[in-house]
Length: 173
Image 1: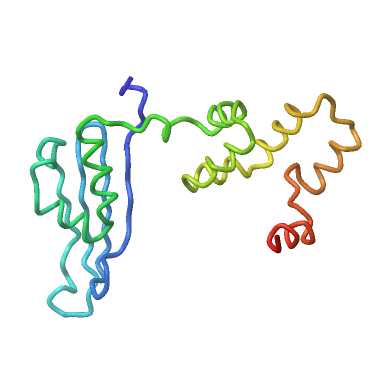
Image 2: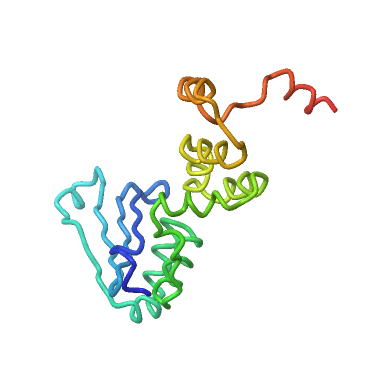
């Protein structure tokens, strides 16, 4: 099953926390962990320093406390824990499924559950709020959709928000 995963399994880039201005890139592939850094400093001593790279196996990464502290300092504990889980073979297959397949799966959920799923991640928020999902949901929950309604939905969107006065009534009660 792991052969279905794409490389890299995970990657992230960003700057170090203040006052550090260095740029970092961290990736986990199927076989290696790669840590790259670029020093960004106005100091003359650092002006000509070259970018660095540390590449190690998953097993070596799991034992490298220095690299753990670097990843945690720059990207946080959650990223470190996620990378360690990947190195232990705990893959998040759901994260690697294509959007089209996830939309098909989401369409089996009740609409209340779709709202909850949309709160779990940016990707699911985007999918659960997409026009494609709402068009499929309207067709699934309505026996027929007239051509007039379909053409109106193309203009204003398949997901229509509640009118402001309805929102105000709910908020006031």
